[in-house]
Amino acid sequence: MQPHFSDLVVGTYGRGFWILDDVTPLRQLNDEALKSDVHLFTPRSAYRFRHVRETSSDPNSAVRGQNPHYGADVDYYLSAATDTAGARDSTGKASTKVRLAILNARGDTIRTLDGTRRHGLNRVYWDLRYAPVRPPRLRTPPPGKPWVTLPDSGWRPLVVWDLDLSQQGPLAPPGTYTVRLTEGATTLSQPLTVLKDPNTMGTVQDIQQQVNLALAIRSEMDSVVGLINRIEWLRKQIEDLGVQLADSSTVKNDSVAQTLAKAGHDLEEKLIGVEGDLFDVHLTGAREDAFRNPTKLYGRLSALLSDVAEDGADFPPTSQQQQVNAVLQQRLGAAAGAFANVLQHDVGAFRGQLRAARLPDVLAGNP
Figure 1 (cartoon, one colour):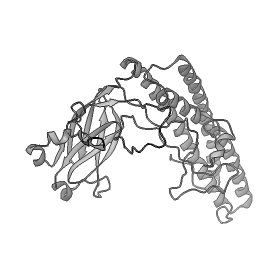
Figure 2 (cartoon, helix red, strand yellow):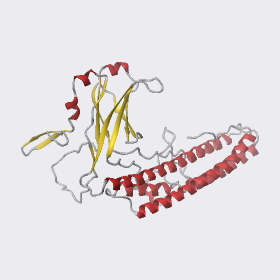
Figure 3 (cartoon, one colour):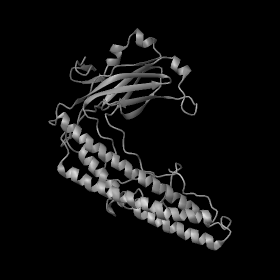
Figure 4 (cartoon, helix red, strand yellow):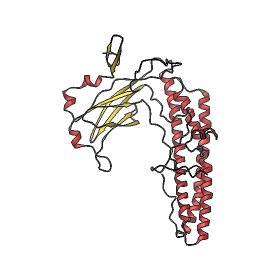
């Protein structure tokens, strides 16, 4: 028994070894737990290890080991009764998931996880990260590239291909957290301690400063994504309206249809102009596209997030990182102002033209 991590290690003299990671729940498994419909075990402390990057490796090595999952493992027990009773989702359908939430010391939920819902012991891993950046949803093909199709979901992902861009949430700083499990009407909680990597030289205060800046950057990226998604929603409706206007039965007067079609095209060009400051609108998903145009706000924030939270050590952010973030904040404010101006004047005017033609306001609502 490995005493520090509570792992069961089985090995032979010289031929190899095998590890059963974290037998903490087996040590806590008693009659009280087995008689419960739901039982959440107290998790062991989790180390916030920073990955060690090797300079070389032996290509002829016969070792084929596999590391355990990174982060904290959360274990819980479900009785057979949960299979028959069953939780229900918002639509009334039987749920096959157990909801887990990670709360910080202030009680704020920083991550939600879906757990398995099987009779017996279940294990879910938290990678010690905050929630990732919201995904952009591109509902239109790149300008001038109608051959780029959309999947059945109705949107395509923003693929940038650069290796130094991050959309991950930052690692949570060392401290005490709460794991909250919800299964049906039952809610259980247990404390979880996240420990600092003993191999790094930065202090907990240094790490907290780093995380604070990383969270600010993530929030800015979410704001950029929100603008992208709203613009894409508007562009999609304008393009759909253009298809309808091409059908003479939509508008009885052809001249009115042509006027509306041109107004819609002009409005979409203005929206593309704003969107082009947020990300490279010419990206198709092909790798070479990432090198044909300058990186825009989304990519620059992604690179800064990677530089602050992924590729550094446990030290506070540098003054250069903070200055770059301040510049990108200004660009984000300018882009948000430009979009608000287009909404107020150009979109408002176009809606007036639609109402005059007695067409529905297709630009209402949000994605």
